[in-house]
Length: 264
Length: 340
Image (cartoon, each protein chain N blue to C red):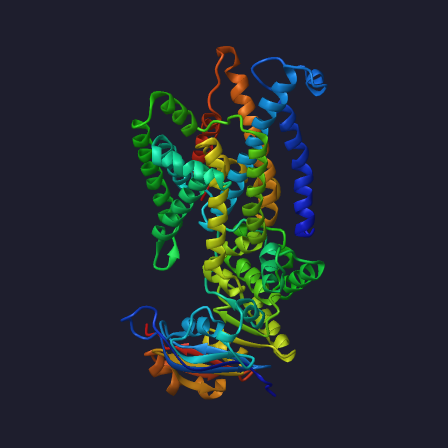
């Protein structure tokens, strides 16, 4: 079912400052064409750092990252941005740009010297806004939007980039349930067309429902990796999250529902 | 707003071009004495001399300096992610002033005079080059000292600029102390931002040399947009953030240096004009940059005309830098208050 590798990250090491503990310490992760891979784990496990290493926004101090078979350091910045799109956890809030202008920014790696978009780029941006259900926000300045609306616009920017691999850090943050479902459907559609995604997620039930494969990180390492059925178990999750976690199958769909046990 | 950027830029230019042309006409027809335009165009004296040797060069200079300062202001606001950025506020003008002042002193010494004449023999303009160098040094300080933890911090950079500005005026004032009284008078006028009467070939040279930084900034405009997303956001879209910032700083410094060498410290143009232009065009730098060049030209021509008209009765005129500061300082406060 899965195709050629879009991302091959092998034995990565990274520390943010000399003397600091390693944020990523020998982690490996692969994303194949057609695949949605979720990265889960407690705070400070190294998930966001791994996402940045995969996009080349941070340079690994050990190990190697390849995009579609080419090592990152052999790709130009623009070529890299045509192969991987990144959605950060936080977005600037004071932008006076409209949603459409922000979506158009995703076309940047495809533009020439004077950075002028053609009609094709405008169409791609509008299609991406529609994909993220943000087309009706197109002419509104980003600063006027709610957090969830802004998130949809920045998702549209990532979609407009037309990169095979999407690396999305907390893509569902601020999204209501309907838009979470829409997002997963959009990612599925892209995967069927040969794309792939690496998602950093905190919502474990959503991770189980949306992803083909999960990687559980702890202290910069990938502790467990496999299908949601093998990773989302109380035996794996409870020690990693240092709290008692219950997993029950949804009686209607069989999807795994994950909940921490909260004493009262 | 679904129109392409090129179309929006063309529309903005189409609106601002007549405004600038009107400003030119106002500038040419404003002055101390009465001028018979028809006579001047027929070549009758003294009207022809007044028009072509006095008013035209002054209006052209105002246009060039206004455009240069505005374009540099746009670039600095994008680079520092700070709407309050301005070549004057950030010390670039101050750096350029130091450069020019040093050359002025050197011109007073025997060795300096020899060096300067040697330089001009090679076709170099020492004070202009020194001003560009001074602006670059100021930009370097803002750029390096304004950083913390590998990121440029707008507030920090602003403080560095303000401190560097005070330093620059102290240096220039010290320089003034060693000058002869008649030179002091000239330096004072120059410091407060005065449009003089330059020779047309010099103005043409300045215009051509301003085109280079302007073209660099327009080419970078798309990338300046992406910098609004933050360094990481821009890098994720394939922008070489460090190189873009360096190029844009160098181009702005060059534009400011050339402007300051001719007119001294004209403040707040780079603040007022881009903000007014953005109200018309929105924030896209590919539109704002060319539009600000035109708007800046019109603004400084009109400010200079205003300076001449207001004080006509007194038989004197305030330097244009005073007019822009009187307009600009309250505008700066207004921006500071309304921005959240």
